[in-house]
Structure formats: structure tokens, C-alpha cells
Image 1 (cartoon, rainbow, N blue to C red):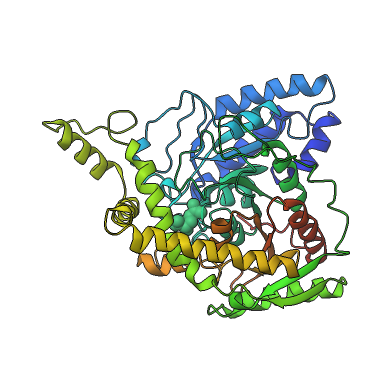
Image 2 (image 1 turned 180 degrees about the horizontal axis):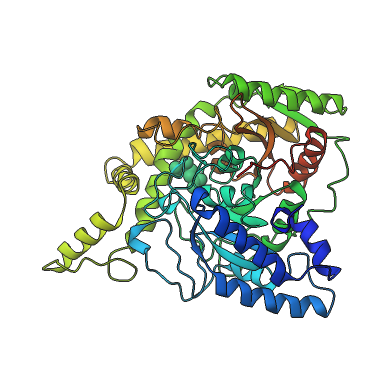
Length: 484
Ligand code: GLN
């Protein structure tokens, strides 16, 4: 096994035993990026110097003993998260040269744990998209088949993990952006409960939905990263004072006492045959392992997309008003007056999809339309939350596909609506603020990964991880990597 193929836990074992240095591991990862980076295109920025300096600091800390499990481990960060002194673009031309004067709380936490930040991964512009094709700076390719999408919006993070160009990565999930690319690239992705992880320093898309989470090579690594990033942050008023358990503690506990629910409506959305087969096989494994699986109902599932595509653009239209050419990023130089400067900076700086969302959101919030659109969407959101409340009385973990289809060929989906509809099975989780995850459960007939989605009650990431660890062990897909 090559060094770049290690999981976090495998590498941590080598590092703490001093059989390998962080410098060696970081160089191995940087070499891997050099060798395969151009084909996969997962990174917007690779911080070679910063990474090597951090690795040397980690080696000094490892030498004293007692370093945390992330110490010296090369990780990648979605380019939506501010990194002090390292360019942070949000995948947008408007921020192409933006270097933040501070770091996101999650980035600070990783650095405090000794992690080595190797670079910033590509993404759909301002995290708006499901394929990672809406990026002004780098469109990544699926490591399993370079002609296919990685999924979005955290496509670069998923691709970097799948291609062994980092041990693990952080992404964000507003309507599926961690789970969907994780599913498409055959890695594990967790979207924590809303409020579990600080959003401070994360370029805001839709503030009532955004959440940071890990993309990793296996379930244990996801638990390790969650241990490092969860917890209250006084700088994010929506982060909660909920105790953070050791998420690795129950990984080996099996399925005893866990009830699984299969939402009928998730199987009525025109699922691809390969997806259905892979998910049903995983469920068969659960039953064989003695788990209780029953059918449940989430009757308002089909309205999630419509509600989300009003609420998220409404919040985005407000959040993105800060990019005005004055305070951040790109400023048009030819304008004759202030209004023209705003107009030209925003027209040129933002891409088509972002402008579409700003227009939809501004319209949905405008006086006279607010009741018909934003208020209605919020009411639907309340009904979806109620659906989950009822369903989670009958089961502990909801099990389903992540997306209706596996990854599709780059450039093959051009109308926004069909793109939006691919989020139908992931959006409800965010509307309800619940934790959800994706883990590999099979492959399509043409060799593309398929993910299994698990959802649980608020703050029950422990249940997700416990179930996922058992499923992962029985299916044996962890460790399968694309040949590049
Ligand atoms: N695909 C969804 C969107 O385009 C979700 C994106 C996300 O989770 N950031 O809005």
C-alpha cells in the first residue's frame, strides 16, 4: 500500500509509532497531486509550502508524544471555507483573488489538532449546484471515469479523497453537497445536525441550511474528523451547546436495538435500476445482520425541492449582496459612477447559476410576493419537519438512496430544473436540520459508485456512524479506489 492511500487512522498509527514522518506523508500526497492532479482537477489552490511547514511543526509535536489523531495528517478544505493567508474563492470569479484575513473556526480547529492543510478544493460557485460544473475556476472529473461529473457542490473534496490526493477533506452541505458528491465518488460523507458545527468563516450561501462536514475514505475517519470539528462556537450564534461525544466510541457496537425505516416515497421518484439494486442489496445485508427494517412514510418528500429552491435562493440573495465590488473581490474598473460599478462588478463577477438564484431569491422576497412564495415555502418546510418527527418515532435510522441516479456524463444536463431535481432525496434533511450521511454501497453497470443515505434524529450522528460502520464492514467497499 502506498502512503497516499492510507486512511487517517492508518496514517495516524504510522505517525505516532514514528515509522513515518508527517513530512514524508505530506510529500507523498503532494506527489500524488502532482501526478494525477491535472486529470482530476480537484484543487483550485495547492499550498505546497504551507503544507510542508505545517508537516514539520506536526513532526515536532509528534516527537513529544500524546498528539491527537489528526496530527500530521494531510487534509483538503473546500474553497468555501476561509483560510487565513490562503486564497479562498468560493469557486467564483468575483473572489478569484480574495485572501481572507482570518480562518473559519473549523479550519482553526483542524490546525489546532495538528492537521496539515494541503489545499483548497473546487466546488460549484458559492456551493450552488449538483455536478460541480458551475465553477468559474476548475471543473473536477470523477476519478472513477474522467468523463463523468463528481457531483456537487463539494465535488473537489470528494474527488480529492477518492483519488488519494488527501487523506480526508471538509465540504459543506446545504441541500446535499456533501452526500451527493460522496455518493458519486465512492467515499463517505457526513452532513452533521444543523448547529453541530460552526459556520463562522464559511462563505454563506443559505444560512438556515448550510453545514460543514467531513468527506473521508471510511466511516472511522469520518468519526475522527467530526470529533475535531463539532462543538459550540461563540462566533456562530446558531451553533449549539450540545455535548460532543467521542464519535468513534460506538463504531464496533453493531446493530442491536436499532430500528431502520425505509421511506416509501424515496423509492417512487423514478430510481435508476442500478441504484435500486445496490440499495436493496445493502438493506438485505442489514436484515441478515439481524436488523429490523420496516417501511415508513415521509409523505411531503416531493415538495422539498420546490420549497428549497425558494428558501435557499432567498437567503442567498441576501447573503450575496455583500459582494458589491467595494468590500470584497472583483471591482469593475470602467464604470463611470457608483451604481454602474455595482452593476458591472456583479454582472461580470458572478456566473449564470448564481445570478439565476439571486434573481429568484430577490423576487421571492419582494413585497407582494413574499406571502405567495417565501412564506408558503416556509410552511412546507414545517410540514416536512413534522413528517420526520412522526417517522423517527417508528425508527432510529432512515435508510435510502442518496440520489436517483449515479453520476452522469459531464455536460449532459443543461437545464437547471433537471439539475435541481437530482437533490430530491437529500434536500429534506437540510430543511429539517437533521444529520445525514452517504456511504458506498455498490457500483453501476458501468463502474460508477453508488451511495447509501442514512438519516437520524437531531444530534444522533452517533447512530448514523454506528449503523454505517456495520454496513461498511459487511459490504466491504471501503478501500476500493479508482485506478488513475
Ligand atoms: N444542489 C443544491 C443546490 O444547488 C445543494 C447545494 C449544496 O448543498 N450546497 O443548491
